[in-house]
Length: 399
Image (cartoon, rainbow, N blue to C red; front, side, top):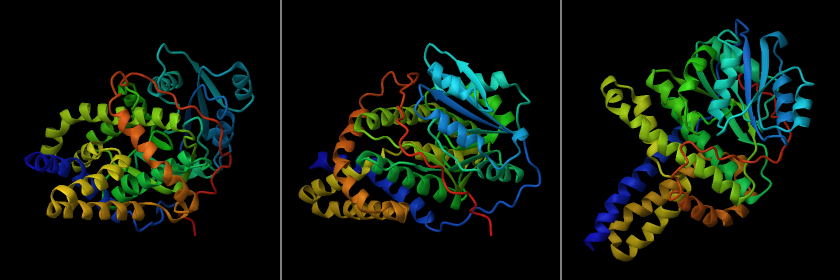
């Protein structure tokens, strides 16, 4: 019985507190207000960087969408960073009015590709840099909306990345997870005055800042390294909920396993590196940085959805009175997911896909024991080209 009590209190720290964290930010994500940036007074020079590693199936469509902007062509440059693309793909890209930078690395990574690109472009190439993944699609107003943010003095911003395909059970669950992340770690955080989390693509930065800092990113989790650098420097990251970037969701369990392994490893290494700055952040009152470290301490959400109900059952059998808090935690966790999930995602397809959750739970659990050697290893997510339509016009703040 003593052992159960000890494990129970350990789970309070590892499971119950994360549930309360998720519930708080999910609750504050509920008011879905419109983005409020007015039309820009100045059109800034922008560059869109698209790292493309073996992305032959998707890069042409992505490049075409990035080029089709309602923005002066002389102020908007698209750069594809080609890493191991096929010759025929390179030929098609060179027919488009964009720049192709070919790179070769012994061990490829997105951070290396981005660093090589800004080194090649030079210090005066642009005022704003936007990062897209090779499978991302944006609509024609994307550059205009990003420029509005920087006209207001923002240095870093994350757009609303959302699924362009829900064609398998795994893709449906991946899409739902992305939207829950958007609600809790972006809209909910911004509503409470904290910075938005970055997500690796659909993000934009002041070009000078990005060029000076991207070379500091040395792991496969460059988005988390950029977050830590921004927050350590006291730079706020805004979130554009109305500006959509379509992203291909993983379709099979193998791709899910590899992608989550990379994400969990990136979170673990980011936390282990950034925690050294925690005392200084506390002393200086940098609550944004402290919150980010708390966020990186959270276990994967699918593990919470499996372990919290399981432990509630165990406690019901072993210590019925002690189980009350866990059944309350189950309720709060389910309420948090309900508040964070958009109505359009809560459909019959999601209900059907939920049957695959036990498999994904076990895959995620297995990943916790396979993090060794992933810090510097590039784990590629293969793209098939599923979903091809660009998002509707991003005109959320227009009358």
